[in-house]
Amino acid sequence: MKIRLTDRSFLKLLDFTPEEIRYLLDLAHKLKEEKRRNKLKNRFKGKSLAMIFEKRSTRTRCAFETAFAEEGGHPVFLSTDDIQLGEKESVEDTARVLGRMFDAIQFRGFRQEHVEMLASGSGVPVYNGLTDEFHPTQILADFMTMEEVFGRLKGLKVVFVGDTRNNVAVSMMVGCAKMGIHFTAVGPKSLAPDAQMVAKCREIAQSTGSRINVTDNIDEAVDNADVIYTDVWASMGEESQSRQRSEILAPYQVNDALMEKTGKTESIFLHCLPAVKGQEVTESVIEGPRSYVWDEAENRKHTIKAVMVATLT
Ligand code: CP
Ligand code: NVA
Image (cartoon, rainbow, N blue to C red):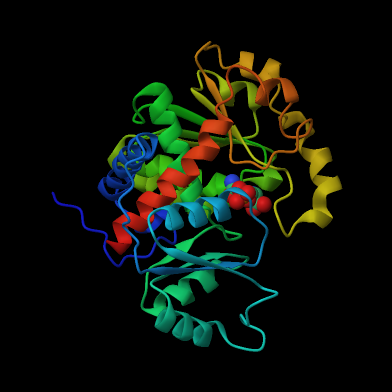
C-alpha cells in the first residue's frame, strides 16, 4: 500500500494508521542517516513555517526550526508576546491569515481545540508541538529511539510511571495501541488517564495485539518492562500544583531500585525532557547506562523533519 501524507496536518496520533506511523518512522531513520552523511536536499526551499509558542520549549522549537532551515526553509518564531491569538484576534482569523502567508504552522499551547481550529481554518498543514492533551511528535522520537535500541517495536513493554494523565503519557498510550506495543500506566489513582481514552486505546489495541493496563501497583507494573518512561510531575500550566504532586507521586520516582524491578538487564529509561532530577527520576538513573534520553532528544529533530517532509513535499 502506497502511503501519501502530503497536505495532512499532524495533530494527534489517533488520526494516523499504524502504516502511516510506520512510514513516518522509516522516513525519520532515513533522514537521520542523510544528516549524518551531510546529504541534505533543500526540500523546503522557498517555503515558510510559522511557529506559534504559547508555552516554553527547548527541544521542540529547536527541532522544528533547525530541521526546516537546514532543508532550505524559512521558519518564523511567534510567541504569544508577538502574535494576536484568541485575545484581540480570534483563532479562526489568525488561522486564515497565517494560511495565506505560510506553507505550514507549528502550534505549542494549551488547548487541543486551538491546534485543531488552526488546521481547519488555515488550509495548510498544522503540527501539534504539544497541547494540554497531546504531544504526538514526542512519541515518534520515542519510538525511533526504541527501534534503535531494540530493533523493533511490536511486542515491547512500555511502562509510563507517574502522572499518567498528562499529554505525554496519553499520547504514548495511543501510540503503543497503534503499534502493537504493550503499555502500562502506573501512578496514583487520582492521576489515572481518562477512562474513555483508555477504552478507545483498548479498542485499537485489539487489532494490533497490544495490551493496555492502568494500575497503581508499581511492583506489578514494571515487571518485565523493556522501557521505563517518566515525565515531570507538574506539567506546564500546572505549576501551582507542584507541592501536592510531589507528595502523591513520591512513591513513583524512577530510581535504581525501580529499574531493578523490571527483572531485565536490557531494559532502558526514557524521558521526554526537561527533567527535574531528584524528583520524578534520580540523577543516577538519568545519567546512568540504561538512559537513552539524549538520543531521544536528538531524535525529536529527525522525526519532526520526517513529519514536515511527508506533509510538505
Ligand atoms: N520534550 C519536549 O517537548 O521538550 P521541550 O519542552 O523543550 O520542547
Ligand atoms: N508534560 C510536560 C511535557 C513537556 C515536554 C508538559 O506538558 O509540561
